[in-house]
Image (cartoon, rainbow, N blue to C red; front, side, top):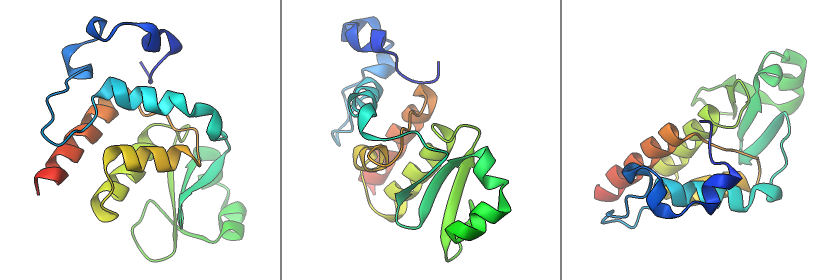
Length: 148
């Protein structure tokens, strides 16, 4: 499934898979279900636009924006998913899951944010909703970064 549904929020924690509710993190990394709840909790705060600046100079957009060269030029976008100088546009089909995880990973690694800091800061700017598999990967990244 592509993220959390309202029904998932009403289910007791024990009804989900063990990896969804694993609370054994020595670094207090929230479990996947808690991360999903946080993403749904403030869903109304962020609009769903074709493109949003989720961090200074970093944008997430749907594919239609990436293929519109005139729009990219007006926005000052110099690269699409490239870590070069200038503004960066990160694109996936809908701009809510894959691209959001790429930006979250960048924020965690290079801006030294936790998984929750990265996702909630982006969530304030764009209606992101990473799927469970990607959240598991972000959670593992969080754990690895905390170990370093």
